[in-house]
Image 1 (cartoon, rainbow, N blue to C red):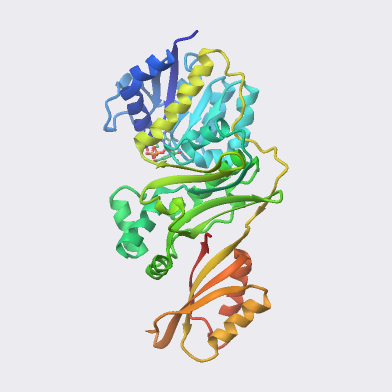
Image 2 (cartoon, rainbow, N blue to C red):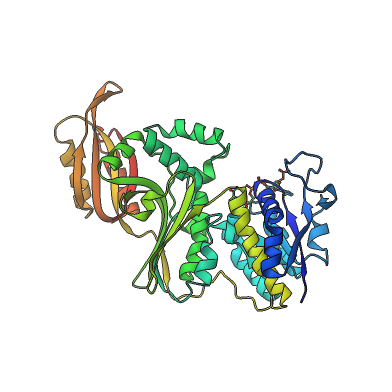
Length: 434
Ligand SMILES: NC(=O)c1ccc[n+]([C@@H]2O[C@H](COP(=O)([O-])OP(=O)(O)OC[C@H]3O[C@@H](n4cnc5c(N)ncnc54)[C@H](OP(=O)(O)O)[C@@H]3O)[C@@H](O)[C@H]2O)c1
């Protein structure tokens, strides 16, 4: 049995440092429990003279990625540079060279997971990416091991810490989105360019991976209807609170009658639902299986040490297989073999807040268009009026019964182009979870 397992790491940013640090911290415990001495022997660092705030012998650094990808001593390549390229090309090269790969890169796995998983199989090595979905939460390993006996009917995730932090702060302090975003950036919970997070792209990447693991469905992030949180306002938070809901950016997939629907969008979650209690930077994944029933995984979806913990879990799993010479026994985690049909968006209950001029007959004109399109309104509520652009306006809040969001958007488009300006603005649309 091979006792020393050597790994090379690409990138020494937040997660690179967290992974290295977690291994240093717990090396002897890992060795005691597994009998393996796992070492990170080389690290790709494109600027080795820069102070990275971590004590790593300079001799471990290389600026040449081939020194890792072509080193016959290295069994495992840990990819932590992020982005689709060159990360995919580096992982592909490592797999072709007979090295197993562990990555935290959701963008690359969502875009190229199928290709990389095939390469891993062809080369009898392993590809693992637990940290790519919900950081420190071991959801992928659980789905593909302990929960394998289940057929799942749904998965709902709060998969992005940045947006959950922003929505929680807006809810707790009644602040505006823009104000909370600046605070989140100052505290390191949001990137300087927050687009991928606040527009739901990051969550869609993760949901795309979950769709493969949970349902065996091949749906790239571009096939998942995705809406972000930038239109959520104080008024929505206040309505949600007063109606017993919390607003969350939900990544959801649902199976019914052989059809799988999925979307990423802001949603009003009832306060009694376990996902409503997931606040700030925390993540959670709520799955429903036909044997296990409801199950919620909760924890830190980001951060150097929690994510490093997930990366190392994969490294240890792979190292164990290598030590037993059983890495060839590779069951890919990604699968695209189910008979289920992927249909994109499903039907849900929706909340719409719009501002209309305060004059008689407006509500009738609006409801006529919804009625004509077969869209059923559950309730409509009128809020306090105010003056906007010299016009007396009033906010209206509609709750619609099950409808496709695209159908709702088409109806709202028709209403917005009615003559005499029937609608001043459509301010926000959110799913309502029941
Ligand atoms: N941050 C989290 O909490 C979190 C959670 C889960 C998963 N992830 C995933 O983990 C991965 C790493 O994220 P991170 O937060 O650690 O990012 P990061 O702090 O930006 O670190 C990226 C590292 O990769 C290096 N790098 C980037 N492109 C490179 C290239 N072409 N060649 C060589 N080195 C390159 C960077 O070098 P320089 O420092 O020289 O720029 C930096 O050291 C990403 O895939 C991310 O999605 C992150």
